[in-house]
Length: 326
Ligand code: SF4
Ligand code: SF4
Image 1 (cartoon, helix red, strand yellow):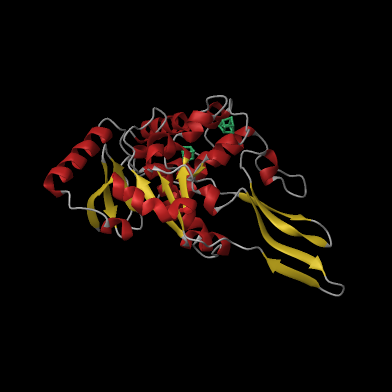
Image 2 (cartoon, protein in one colour):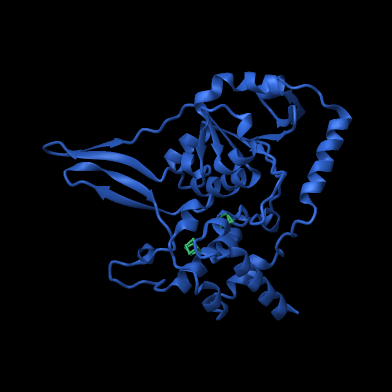
């Protein structure tokens, strides 16, 4: 992996021919908007690019004697998405694992192949952030993505590719400055959850604590739509003799999400639905994939209309588990 400093002038030169293909997350825009041209498309997170909220999977029509089916088209032009570390991690460590493992989702794979990632260091974690608790960090990086630390007059860059050819060696002084900055930003952040948490949480599926944890969530689903790692979707058929299959975002917070055709609902109340959201992110997914399905971005905490806070649910269950282990 190469490292170097790119001056503002060279950064703008590198961006010049990419203007129409640049995406920036809303949270990264708040901090680094001035480093991007006005043409940049601002999105909530990478899910909006890779898994659109409504997508035609295929079109069909009755052609007199047989059904004709045409697959939906996916734009495969190379795109660049710049985001905070947690938002990039949501793609690399969560949605990629879901959609690129068998059975592979063809549309996701096509979009993902043409998407290059840029991770902008998070120099001012917000009060709602908790990335360190779930295995991430403000300087989290990955070998497939460019890692960038915008400074006053230049950008510190790590990675591979064309941008690095515009960079100059920063030397020991810059290395020290970046390390000091990282230490400052990371100081005081919470330690990761205990390694036994996901397994032990599973043992508390029937715990009475869930009544208390869930009662004030009104199951509006806002948190799941804004979450960069929530990926549940619904498939519906739109039209009879001619139409299309629509894939649209769904939410485990909605009563109909698990409603059976028999009208039986295995998650009939808010308690079961909140428990599912927490269990999936902190027990089922990590037991299967090795990491939590929450990157601690805190967006759900910030946007919840009734201030339901997923950190409180986790803290309560950690306390309870540790009490019983003592
Ligand atoms: S936690 Fe908040 S945002 Fe999420 S469903 Fe409940 S009330 Fe809505
Ligand atoms: S903090 Fe909330 S919005 Fe962010 S990844 Fe975790 S559950 Fe999703």
